[in-house]
Length: 340
Image (cartoon, rainbow, N blue to C red):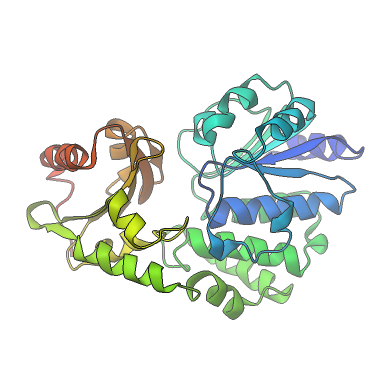
């Protein structure tokens, strides 16, 4: 984000305005963490922003500071629509196209509010007045930290803000193991710990609070694991019936696809989850090296994301979706070759 844009935003925020912060559908740790961190930062600038998310988010994020202030669009569309319609500024975090917000897409697209995008996903749409878009960043939370720094306000980062930013960076980097994790990322994390983020407690809250049902569901998912040796590809399926049998709660399947990717010689992994309510199969894709699941998802599954982590969906049933997935693998045979 250029100095001129930062100066313009500083000027905008000198006076109190109606501000909304929006994240994508099925918000994850980066979406919730960045939204809460930005909200609390803006409050220190005498603003009173409201966070609106399209739908619910995982239980393992609900301990974060001020999560009770988050408005879920699916729960109160009337109130949310009024807030969005009256907004002077809308910050869009962790997404780069309005369709990622589900049912909120139309009202966001038609809103006359000034829009400020902070996002690290590839191929952003040009809907924002001010775009802080950087695909090299580990997470939107890292970008929120940089945004606060560019505003010359890192002194305003307290323990709560630091905690929220830490959660987003930690979850979007796979606990700092993905290649998007740079030396600068670690320097930022060091600063967050100095400002009060308790890294051990945060890790335990997010990763070590599994329910019995969630562990049982993981067992079922791993039992459904298939490895296609010819294409160095693994996939997992979970039907709606299997989700019901294990009392599925939002967030219970988070990270399961990484177990498939951890297989020896696996270069791409996928998980296919049946969602009868939406009438789709939800897809998460992961890869190693230079193989782009972002490109694969965009071309075949109406999705996108990053080179090594992307999502998508299918309107076919579960069996047909798997068949489609397997049928496209020969196209990628050369690029899926395992490199030692």
